[in-house]
Amino acid sequence: MVKKHPKGKGNTCDTCKAHPKLKEAAQMIQFGGSNTFVKPEAQKTLTAANTTIEIWKEHAGEKWYLSDDKSCAIFFDLVQNKWHLCDKDNLYYRGNNLVQETKGKMLPLKNISWYFDTGKSLKLQCNECKERGETNATKKSKCHKNNCNGSLHYPEKTKYATGIKSMEITVTKVLNGYEDLPEEINVEGGKLMVSENLTKQLAPVTVTDWGRVNGVYKLCQDIKPVWFKKSALKNKNSNLQMKQFGGSNEVKALPSFELNDWRTHAGEKWYVSETNKNCVIFFDTIQRKWHLCDEKELYYRGNSFSFKESDKILPFEQITWYNDTGSSLKGECSECKQNKVAKNHTKLDGTNCGGAIEFAEKPIFAIGVPTISVEIPTITEN
Image (cartoon, rainbow, N blue to C red; front, side):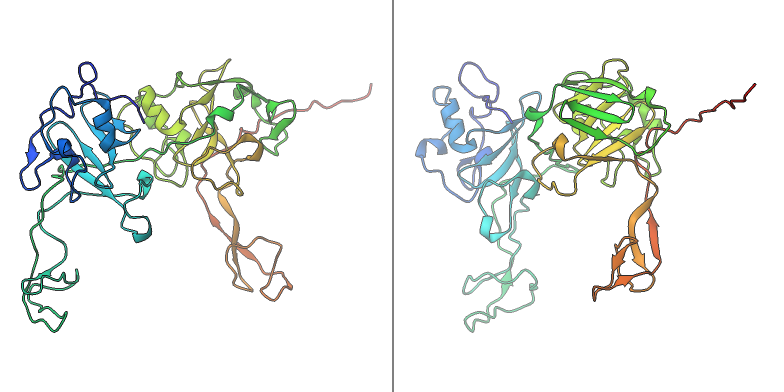
């Protein structure tokens, strides 16, 4: 989200200047819609004198999105009460919410349905009484309102948004909580230490090869891991995902392996080991869990079943770290037929149930730090 005006000379705006108007509505295409503008001057072709940031904010509000080259904008149009995606030539898509209680409000982009205009209404209209028909009616149907027997047709509508063939809009969630992250994490022998009063157990194993992930991890926002490059695509889990980003949520193909592509998964800030730049700890914004990994494997994931806020990363004090075993911790009971129950569960009447549990298999995303073999020499008395 940016506060800058779309690029232009001085305090004027290339996105506002002398754009073609929509003939049917006499509006600038980028601001087109069924609502009329409040100020008459906004109806006219803007001149260099009045293409100021203030005029732009009358439509786009306080914040909006710009493409990297500053040629395309996504903004919530305060006059039309819809999201708009446009460039200097056209309005391509509009975003709306169909829930009546919240219709017209500036909603999070994840709740928006994007569409373009076809030039016709989606509802039939009577040519006699002009009442709108239902969407599931047909052109052969007759008007059933007010005892009218008029014919139905799809009325023409102004095409405000033209659409683009094969276009997809993906919304990256903006998460909060990065400002509360500690500057340093120390991983040592199965313990993750954030501060003197916060130590987290990473795994209940006894003899493990902790050397590969031990070390001090520093918080950063501009250093991507050494392994984050195209060759990493060869290192996949059973779900055909890059192991480091593995999880139950779908992982889409990366367009490249630049820093911004890494941020698609790792968010604003993450931790990189000082001794091994391949080792990282990050909050995976797609899987919604903390990940500890290197160039080879995803070792541990951090989650909290009680923390369900959608706009925050999980705080360290609430995280439970775990690795996957390959089977669910809950299953279906052969006796009481309850689903998603653990071994020691009760029946619906409150009595203990001793039925066998069939646990479903689950993918192994986090393998845990591998166990190593330790040979203990035999001690004999002389």
